Length: 129
Image (cartoon, rainbow, N blue to C red; front, top):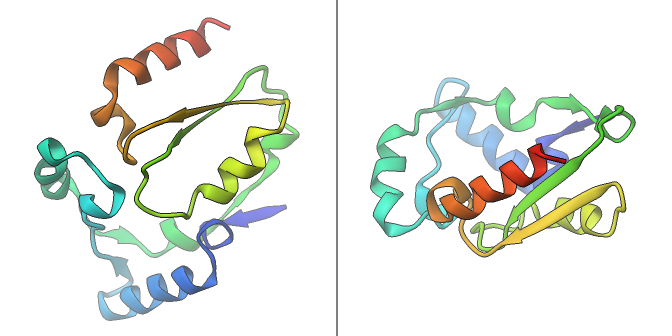
């Protein structure tokens, strides 16, 4: 099974990415940090570090074999104030799946900037399982 980002974001968003890429030589301009609710203290830095991305990074399919891979621990960190609803369906699908441990973290998309101590603790706890 192949799942692309367009399966996560929806057809409307995929078409918007395609239109942007057509206007910008096949590249998607950097998405402003504000879209992802990056905290004010880090938003300017994130924007200066962001660069255009190839269209394929937004629409190219990935093999959805993770559900059948022999992985001992499956963890999903969900930024509840992500700034968009494009990951809500993934969160909904995984939160009741007994193979996954889902953590809701009340912050924007950049968990490592907004809640670094909580993110480190989560990663260390999961790595120790």
